[in-house]
Image (cartoon, rainbow, N blue to C red; front, side, top):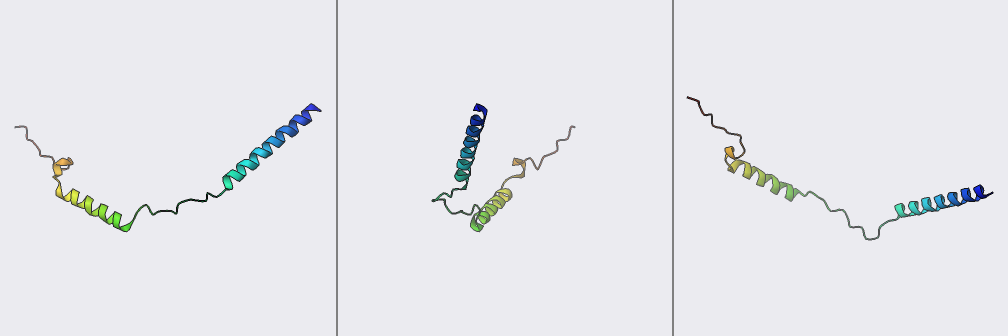
Length: 73
């Protein structure tokens, strides 16, 4: 008889926990901010212009792309 009561108690606790979890997961937050675009056309244009200017105005040896060959004579 006690096993039946324990089984009902455990079943009741599991159902209560599942229902609380279900209600918590489905609630809608009232003050959620609207999605702000991460990338804008102006921001991408500025980044591309800045990066191209930086690549074309620096010395190639700064990046290790141009190495002078030293002859071992």
